[in-house]
Image (cartoon, rainbow, N blue to C red; front, side, top):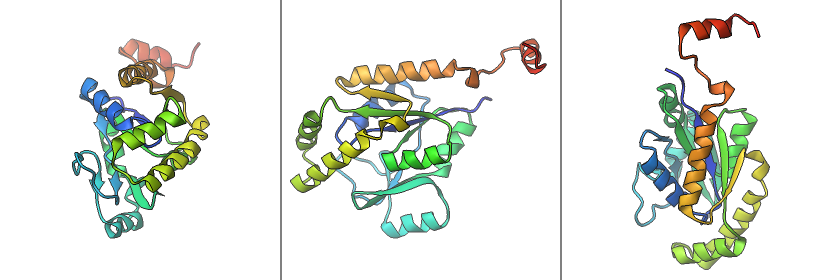
Length: 207
């Protein structure tokens, strides 16, 4: 069975990543999710083990010591990390896997030359980003300002990614991601011979 590939997705807080990923999962039921671990507090409507694995700071630091994470970072005074098991196991079984990472996580994977499709979602504007964060109503004004400043820095790191999508309409954003994933499957690097004679022809080293 061919190995699945990693879809590595980032977006500034308030861009609409959560909604985008929810719709993406509905359209691709076989897409596996590498559920991240975090030490931040659970928000209204979130489910432990579905949106994140919510654990204590002490538990997180123990996992760091045990090298349980593919990558991890501290963002807004909270830890976030992707476990090796949640990322690698589904792909070994042939499933494409979604990794929702911040910029620090992507920097770590790029330094490792970790294979995957790297995609970042932008807001239509910083003004719209601020409006969405205010509308969400989950953060104090000081925290919103902090998230906006962090978002600005994240946007400037776009060259680390393979694709950039501006999230004007979430359905359009999801369709763009689906198109990218479909195109990636036809890359030469992902090709799997469909018959023994073709495989033999490709393996004999002739042009």
